[in-house]
Structures are given as C-alpha cells and as structure tokens.
Amino acid sequence: MAQVQETPVKPGYDVVIVGGAMYGSSVSWWLASNPDFGGSVLVVERDPTYEFCSTSHTNSCIRQQFSNEINVRVSQFGAEFVKNFREYMGNDPRVPQPLIHSFGYMYLADNADFAGVLKENQKLQAACGAGTRHMTPDEIAAAYPFYNLEGIVGANHNLVDEGYFDGATLFDWWKRSAREKGVEFIANEVVAMTRNAAGTQVESVTLKSGEIIACGTVVNASGPRAVLTSRMAGIDIPVEPRKRYTFIFAAENPLDRDLPLTIDPSGVHMRTDGQYYMAGCPPADDPAPDYDDFVQDHSIWEDKAWPAIANRIPQFEAIKLINSWTGHYAFNTLDQNAILGRHTTVDNFIFVNGFSGHGFQQSPAMGRGTSELIIYGEYRSLDLTPFNYDRIERDEAFVEKAVI
Ligand SMILES: Cc1cc2nc3c(=O)[nH]c(=O)nc-3n(C[C@H](O)[C@H](O)[C@H](O)COP(=O)(O)OP(=O)(O)OC[C@H]3O[C@@H](n4cnc5c(N)ncnc54)[C@H](O)[C@@H]3O)c2cc1C
Image (cartoon, rainbow, N blue to C red; front, side):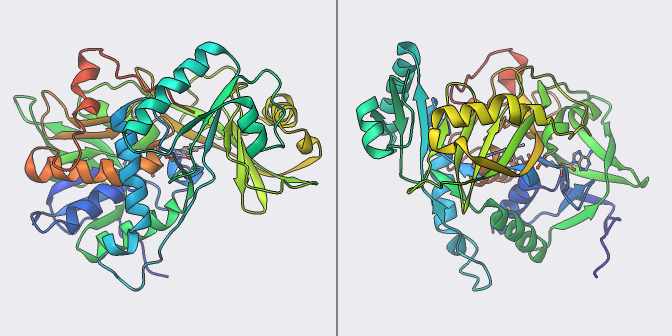
C-alpha cells in the first residue's frame, strides 16, 4: 500500500486548502484544471480515511427546488456538471459517467401558508427553467397513489435533474485528477496560522507535525469544523456542527414506482434508495454537538421517523431497519446558506463554509467560483457575491427557505 504523505515537499504554496474532502478536492481540481492558474496548491487533510466528515455521511441528492434564484442556478450547474462529468474531466476514458436518478423532491404542504410559499417558489424555479410543478392533492394521488394525503393541501414536485447523484465519483476523481495535475494532498492538520504585522494576511499555517508553511492564499474547507479553522486567523463565523440522522429500511411490500424524496410536514424525509428506502430527520432538540460526537439516537427512529413514514405511506407499516448513521451538517446559524469569498480584513483568507445540508450538489459551482475568485479576483461564470462573507459581518441574513 502506498504510504500516505504527511510532510509538504515545499516550504510554501500559492494556495493552502484546510480540509481535503468534497470542497478541498473541488476547489483544488478547479484551480489545477484552469490553464490561467500556474500556482502551487497544498491540501491538508487531518483524517485521510474521511470517516467522520460530512462528505462521508451525505445522502447525495440534488434539487432545483430552492427559494433563491442563485441557489437554483448553482444546482442547475451541478446537474449539468454531473451529466457531463467525463467531458469536464477531459474525456478521460478512465472516468465513469455518473447519472442522476431523477425521482424528484416532493414538498408536501399541510397548511395554506406553506402551500403559498411553495407556489411562490414554483414560479421562481419555473422562471429559471426548472421543471417544478405545483400539485393539488388529486394530482398527487393520481401520480403516487400510495400516499396518505389526509391533511395535505398541495405539493411541489420536479422530475428533471432532481434526485440522487453519484457524488462519491466526483469526489474520487477530483482528488485523483487534482493530484495528477500537481496538487499535493497531505495527511496532517493545520493547528495555527500566523498573520502579518498589519493583520491583513495569513502569512503561514502551522502543521500538527510542526512545519510552518508559507501561503499566498488560505482556503477554509473544514466543513463542520470551519469555525475552529477561521479562529486560527482571528475570525469568527456562525457555523456549527448539527447532527442529522439517516436510516435505510426495507419494506415488506415495496412500492410499485419510485418514491420521490418526500419532505413530510413532520420534518421526516424519505425516498427510494435502490432496493431499499432512505429516511432522515433532525432531532427535535437541535443543539451543536461535540465535533467528535457521532452517537446514534435509536429513539429517533422508533419515536419520530418510523411513525411519520407509516403515517404518510400506509404500505410502509411493515418495514425493517437495515442500517443507520449520524452525520454533521456544517450549519450556518445566521441564514443556512453558504459562506464564500474573502474575509474583509484578512484578505487572503477565503471561505467555502456553512453549506447547511445542501453542499454536495453545490460543490461543482462553488468550487468553480472559488477558483475564479483566486485566479481572477472575481466570480466569472455565476455571480456568487450574495454568498460572500461580508454579509456575516453586517449580520445581514441571505435566507434560504428550502432547507431540509
Ligand atoms: C446526513 C447528511 C446528509 C446530507 N445530504 C446531502 C444531500 O443530499 N445533498 C447535498 O447537496 N448535501 C448533503 N449534505 C451536505 C454535504 O454532504 C456537505 O455540504 C459536503 O459534504 C461538505 O463538504 P466539505 O468538504 O465542506 O466538508 P467535510 O466533508 O466535512 O470535510 C471537511 C474536511 O476538513 C477536514 N479538516 C477540518 N479541520 C481541519 C484542519 N484543521 N486541518 C486539516 N483538515 C481539517 C476534516 O477532516 C474533513 O475531512 C449532507 C450532509 C449530511 C451530514
């Protein structure tokens, strides 16, 4: 087995990325793939097994159904990227072509106010070219007769570029291809940062193994630990870990068609997952756990998930839990939207943080935008400025209403 590299080859790099999971890989790949970038990139990853990162716990779904136009556009690029992955990877014959399993998200409304929000969202999404349609209970029943629609007044659903995608393939190939293009990935931890005398730049990062590495730009791609990394540069951001539970179950009487990713008014979501089904939900009480706390709470399945599933789909009275896991969202407590861009004072410190449960699908667009910011000093493909860090300093929320 190849030895994992722990020590950087050089004393300094143009870009040092803290965290080497989905975002460290995406940003480094976009940088290394751009002929206008001739710099050096070091990616530092504290756990190269990736056992506990969000990326390893993801449900890997993509949707067009957001309440902000820019989030719709970001996911639309995500879908285009997935569907043309091999082409984006230079038509490399080794690269597989992932598909999107478009079963769609089904947002169920049990009151007129929420149905009104769904109708507004549908208009915005349709104006962006998304296939979302608002459905009456009769229309839902005709398309998906297995739902118990008691109390449901409407829903939004979209069958185009919305469902599961094989994000693990993107992750693997971004890492592999970035390495082949000269990006250095090391197994180590950034434990400190040193700023210049004026406090306007991070001059170096200190590794757990003791080396001090000079840097032109630092990218914070530390997932739920983002605030620990930013504090090394004297910066606070409203990002906390939040536990999210995933359950895989088998049904004694499987459905005769795909189960859309159904967002039940109870807060439980459920969907088709190959021969099985997947469900998930937040806990009723949602505090920030310890960074290393991945303990499963089985009462959530018994008391919350299973009853909600059996209520919405009576055919799921007889189901068997097959597997479950707990992952951490990097939860932006201000507005549940990504935090991107440069810090206002420490201007070589760049954020890709706070994705709050929808970061996997956003990684193509956000990685590309961040690479553009580093190379050109501006976003070129999609204007991602609404996500910029400066709103955090102004305490100005950019609210995304469709957070699961
Ligand atoms: C249960 C669950 C379901 C989800 N479902 C979806 C979904 O369906 N669709 C979707 O779009 N998104 C989903 N997400 C969100 C998505 O998985 C994340 O947004 C995405 O994986 C974040 O990637 P990341 O690289 O920012 O963070 P992470 O994957 O957490 O990676 C951060 C990395 O930084 C490393 N690190 C931290 N500090 C340091 C340091 N000081 N030095 C070196 N390394 C460090 C960590 O070890 C880690 O590997 C889900 C998340 C969870 C938890």
